[in-house]
Amino acid sequence: MTKKIICLSGWGQKFDSLESIFDPIFFGQNLVKSIDYSKMNSLEEFFEEAAKVENPDILVGWSLGGQLALRAIEKEILKPKLLVLLAPPFQMVKDSKIRSGMAKKTFDEFYNNFANAPTQTLQQFAILTAMNDRHATEIAKNLDINDKNFAQLKFWLKELERFSCFDLDFTKCLRTLYFHGAGDMIVHLSQSEYFAQRIQNFRLEIFKNCGHAPHLSDMEKLRGIIYDEIAKI
Image (tube, rainbow, N blue to C red; front, side, top):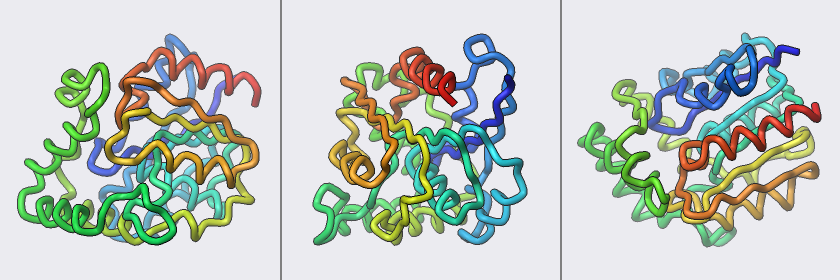
C-alpha cells in the first residue's frame, strides 16, 4: 500500500534533502513531500503550512526538522503512524538542565559568523556535520546546503537557540524510530537519552563512526531499519 511521507530537513540544508531516503527501488512508490520551512519567517507560518498537507503515515525530521516534527505532533497538526527522527537536539544550547549542549558563547560566535558570511559559514557547518564520520570527506563535499533564504535561516537559528524540548508534551507521540551518530559533533549522543525517557514507544539506533548525518553515513542500513518499521504500521 502506498504510504504518505512528509520530510523536514535540517537547518541550512536543502529542504528536500531527505527524499532520497525513500528510493522507490527500495520502498516502492510512495507519496513523498517536503515542507520548506527555511523560506518562512515564523513558527506560526510553518504550522499553517503543515496544516495544509495531507496527514502522513510517516513523518521524518532531521536535526531542527526533528524538533519541528515533534512540535507539529504536540499541536496535533500532524498525526503520523511512525515518526523518524535523525539526531534532533533536545536542547541546542546548554544550561543548568542540560550540560551536553553547545556553550552560549560558541553559539553566539556561530550566529555572528553566519550573519556576516553565510555561505562560508554553511560550508564550515557541512564540515562539522560530517566530522567523525567514516565517510567524512565525501559527506562534507556532497551535502546539499541551502544557498538562499539567509534572512529566514537566521530566524530559525535563533529558534534553535531559544527552544527546548523540556517544554514539549510528549504524550501525543506514537511509534518513534530515532537515529543518532556516535560521533555527532553538533548534537551530543547523550541528548538521545532525554527523548528515550519521554517517548513511550521508542527505538534508538546508534550508528558507529558516524557524525550528524546518519542517513548519509549508511543509507542502506538506515533504509533497512525504516523498511522493517514501516512493515509494522
